[in-house]
Image 1: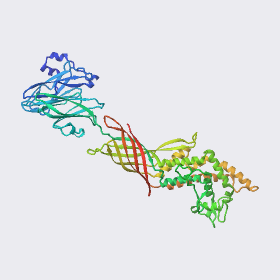
Image 2 (image 1 turned 180 degrees about the vertical axis):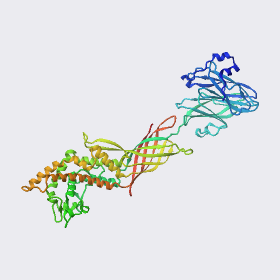
Image 3 (image 1 turned 90 degrees about the horizontal axis):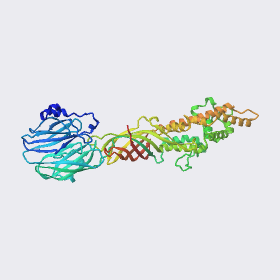
Image 4 (image 1 turned 30 degrees about the vertical axis):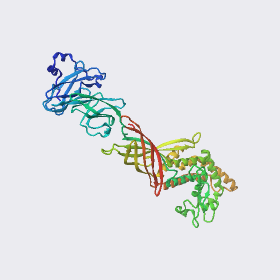
Length: 623
């Protein structure tokens, strides 16, 4: 659009003195940031052929003060039918006003005249040129709500009742005019007289239909403009779940354990070996739920028995009839036959091959003392070992059966025409484990540890699908994660229970911090020295210390080896859920929180499957 030099434009309509007296405004003045242009008089103009009209506007700042000397551009928008403006540009006068003459053409036409300031939004006059007497409608809008409304679409209907109009799905109107300020007045010129008109106004926030108003039975009178007042009322903005949420999840396995986890707990329960035997005399472990906490076996009864048993397995090989120790197959008899050892009451027997002088018979004299000494030292390091180990084992079980996992839920914008089908991505990220610390003062204070599931060996725990939105409810479809429960349990055992609680890296190292093999060897050697006097004991003190060290390392290694062999079992967690949108922004519908989240589904391992329930809350992740 060509811009006429201000003084030249004025020279065509006024004296040069006016140009000299009018100073252009400083467009960097902060007061002009809220500058606005106002229509003076009627924005609806009905003209007969060849008629003249003066179109007037006023330019003011945010405080309503006049802005003088400002340039305004004028333009006809639409088919003008030969109508023309007196100029393309004007300057505002000392009162902020400006006037432009419009000459109607000699044919019927409907168009707008748009006036554009240097700062602020343009305004429009709706012009009708006709050889008939017609009328018009001018819309005055009011709004008492709190939303930020940035656009107002006025639609004109003929023969429509407001009660039949749905704000979110309005039919096409006879005419539509849009403005950006509620003080602006949408106008419709050139209307045939009658009383069947309706005007609806849809007001929008930045991205949503936010308010609506309507008036029907509007009467148009020949040669006049009808002022129509419309009050706007808030419309329900549909919640927008699009974004990323940090979820806090609690999964309840109803006390059921994946088989690998149950076997895992049985293995670490070997530290509770209390010499219980089964029907055929094989040692087994207590499997009753003595304390009623829902978990068995009970742990921590007799660590000394377990350590002594393992030491005997490593230092006394038997059932090697016809062979000496060196030729006895370690592969066949690496652990020996503990049942036979019990049956022989730790005595030598025909076919038993000793690993050291005195052989298995030496255990006749030291196994009870060794067991008691280990238990005494463990109790000194960890008072009430039985209760403490039971507590830790129960906490380890609960870490799985009542899993506390943090995840990230990402919801993307739905595709056009599929507003209620929302793409969703769900990623399990971190796990929180609570243990009651037996070493705290007082004992039993809860310690919470958070670790990344990626650190536990899970490189990808992401599921993607299509969720749905029902009102303010987000429905998350059934989706699955591949989780090796045994691997997860081992990681928790090593990195939380051992490292965080006891500050060690392995079970053998844990036992070594509790048991002083040097002190035990002195006690045992003195006992043997008394028993065998005047002869020398069948083993040296150094041998006894070595056997103790071997027993501790072997006991820890045996547990770790058995654990490693149990955990390689594929597992899966399959869940679906729903949550309510909360903390919804009144202007945009943006959901900032998810509440009342419920999960349901199953967990499985090999052929075993069990139900899972859960709860979750979500908070929108902020940049």
